[in-house]
Length: 225
Image (tube, rainbow, N blue to C red; front, side, top):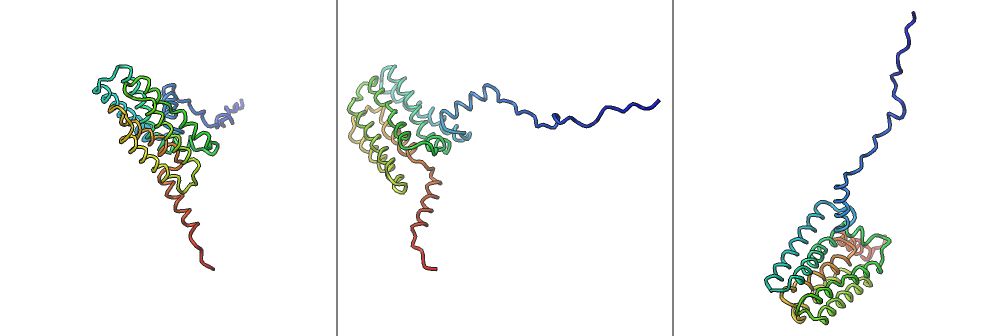
């Protein structure tokens, strides 16, 4: 009797396809979404850690100062929430992840100024913190918005020094002349750092140095060949 041919040893074409990538676990997906929402597009672990540590430390400092000043419980809670946002945001807006999100090609001046305009937290503080006057928070808000408009309209070269100019003068003015309760002396400097130095500047420090070097090279007189 002739031998029967054995089963074919060649694999079917479907067996050579790459395995389907596994979806991340729900907890992993939730963490990635939270990190992206807090910091920016695809943040690195260092960017997330720096933002969260600073947010928590700032909230703790602000809450402890408000508690030591004997402020009401509601005021302490609101101060802690605002401080978490402002301290963490001051770090987050400086990261490359935030620059990728807020300064993407499709985002223009309207988006940048809109982000600054919606930061009405000082008015929320005026509602619950005794001794924080409405004209004080209005002056701080309008100064910040004016600085953001100036930075947005400035050419690329003076944009960074202009943001620093508004930040340092606004901080000094707030500390010297605005009647702010001692527990909220951090508000003006941290807010200005977050919105003017962090959010409104499209480049990180290294990117700005490369842009400046490129501009200086282009403006240098060229000799004849």
